[in-house]
Image (cartoon, rainbow, N blue to C red):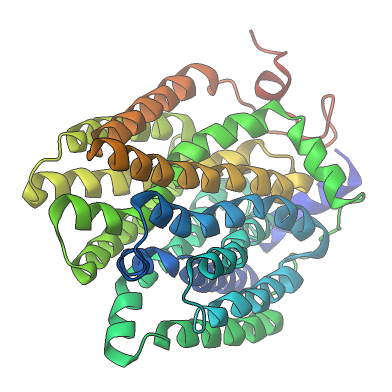
Length: 425
């Protein structure tokens, strides 16, 4: 083991369970929540913009999807920079930068301006790649899955956005949700700078951020994890941003009712994420993922026939929420088991980007298909096919993964069976 690897392992083992670890987990989870709240602001407002600006279904889908894709791709450089600079710098910095597009939403009301603002708003979604390596460095492997699941509760920021945005705008004025979120981002930036601390013994990795991204891109396991997270977390993101439009169109719900039901979907997925981490610690991420993807496929098939909202469609969507949330937690429990210790941030960035991109494509497909066929069935059947493929792939290809050891193999931390294709046959 290299000196860097030994220092990181010692730091994680020594820090876990201390008050410092708990405080850092709470602070980054809070930051993840606030930034995801900002990231998801356009989703519940999409139907209103569609009606006011006369947008097509495809144009509405693009509007709510732009922050998703930017927040996803941005995780790659942000994750690499977090490895180098640490969360104490990156979390306050990204929170402050996200204030600008949030405040811009108070003055723009044209489609091109909204697209441009949504592009910058994607910064809020990149903070996922800050929290995962920070939490991973504070907790040992035996507790890492659950700790990362707790951090994943920050996904609940999208639920808060869906639950509160339309209501706040209707009750107190259209700019109220934006001013509130901007204030929370500013307050959090100060809190994070004061309370966040690097794990004891942290040694910034050598080399540039770009070099580390290229290095983790050579690991086969990175791309395997990308696929799984694109299905698990991508499915969650897709529904969290598009479900309000789906419910309004398919079941003729009001904007407030659709946003409230979407918030319920998100809350259940958020609650399930720590469960996925806990189950992965107790058993193993692979069987957890197989069952989650299989169940998601079955629920998606059921919903493709557009059953009555109560109870069948509600059960189908809540079932998918629980399974996708559990799968998201299990994937990052798997990251904690197989990612090289000094490259967790870079791996997280790439895998997190894949998850966000997995949420970018389905809304566009759903909107385009509905515009042509006046039906969502094809899109839901495609989701079922992809989820089933992920279940089969996980069961067949992911069982041979081994825990990395820094300095071993052809590259530090490379799991030989999954990343190089050699080793166990």
